[in-house]
Length: 260
Image (tube, rainbow, N blue to C red; front, side, top):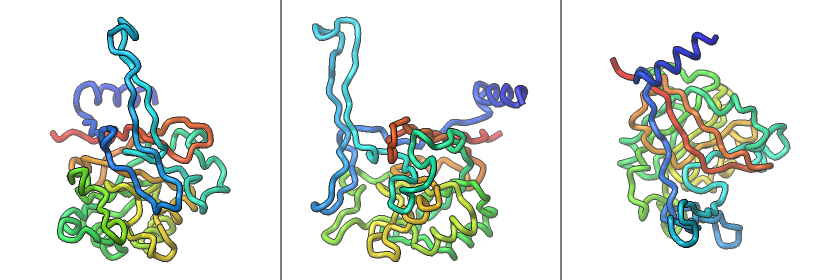
């Protein structure tokens, strides 16, 4: 085992293993999910300078920050949704740390999303992908590559008068991924793991309902999924250790074997 770990470390230092950053830069301008006004709202990221090598602190620079748990590139724990509220070890501080490292299957629907912002992932679409790339293994993250992260901030939320118009999964495929593929979790490039119109689905917001109800995880606001292979990447996604936290912003990294 020690030799395997050393080989892994050498692979990183020698460039045999490539690291891809899947994280959006957390700024005060990055869009935050907007709920109907009768509900509570996730606070956007805020940064306040404390000192910068000046009279407030002559030798140091630092900031105060405030941020909602579900802002920027962030992790959803099972406790985030009502279906997962009573599960054991369901918050970011009690999840087994081993669960923060897992392989990924990257399902590319970028062409479909470019043609239709309301693209809906279905079981037949994933089955076709599996025939071309191999089956989704138990314990895989399923990451939905839409290239949505390439959009300017003004278009990122996809908001119209009737709500958000962003791609995502239908209810049947989420249930199938959990029950038939035993996936680790579901990740997207959009603000949420659900379809923009997921409040109309049955059940509403099925990615949250089924994934978190079965103790699985969510990642959203990812980027650079176009730099990952369909199979073979390993995802490192450790959230902040917030007591009883429902999620947190985080740095998501993918480890990928470098091309020869």
